[in-house]
Length: 427
Image (cartoon, rainbow, N blue to C red; front, side, top):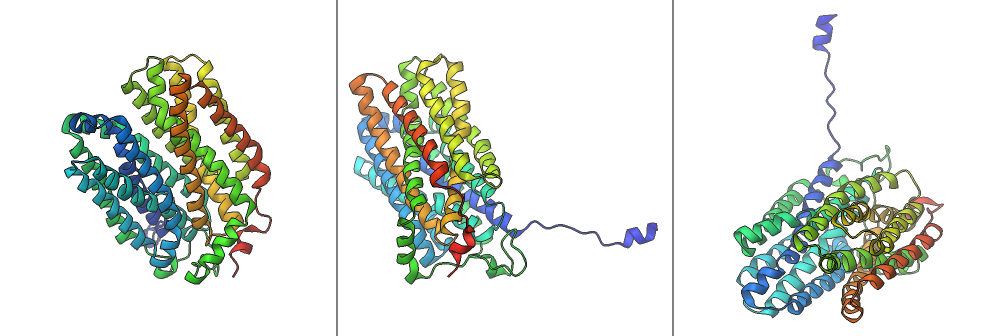
């Protein structure tokens, strides 16, 4: 018996290649997000060295946000024409080039061109396009979980790395600080080039969770891109999601990320603790996004969005009327951080269910353009309201009301497609 046991072959379970692809994708998204968020911690160092005022630096940020949104619209058509690896590596190289060239800047227009156009466009091509395409092509099951992991990587790059980047900028200078995301992007390009085949069929495997004989998602032909876009814009759930993600951008990047630090200054909380609150939100968003992805595989995504937007609305409306001590703000940051990216996995699942895997990345780019429009409008509008009314209270109340509106509409307008995605993917 012992001899037979010694000679019995040991089964070694090798992870599916899709998880290696997902890991490389997470690294690339984190790198692009870190590059996109790095300028937010360099406003004061640049102001001290070049004498630029906050308005000039904010204009560069506005250009970056706009370029990000436009690039998100172009990401899916470019991926259809050129392929995932070529677009992702080119976008990361473009972003790194913008940061490296800015080491020698001397004028404000150079900042807007490099940090605004190059960094914004490069990051926009990678952010959601890469994750949505990988999830659609490589995963037949566990899509919600994977999308949640990608969202967590994006938020970690933008928020959780802020303390590290701020420390490097303070100790070693802002130029050395820019080398950190550049190094991450170099690793991301290498990972994408080596570890990410264009499609599972290229290496003779099925998508993760696909049954025997089940075909993977087929790419859209170049000539059918126009037809695909027409079908997207005729979809009612698409426009509901477009509007809801404008609300998402309004309440996250536009209001909280852009104005939490000055709001804290109004109530006597210094910039270091305020930045720590943002970083804490970024860390908590890792857990919230992964949990939202897990839930999206098990519950109706429309009702998940009802709870996520509803809780966000409650936190925004309650904040100005609660104890505004550091402890109270920390409690707000905990709830808000868990909810920060939780809306992304259910939204992507709805797009996959209602529009099908080939069209979902294009729809995602358009929805995220709505996110950026909402963010830009809120960033400007909250600042104007603060100057005119000397208070952020109206902005928080308006943002909370928008969240309640989105929560009421989404469960009924974006129910799961009764025919399933297969019907939508059929030629």
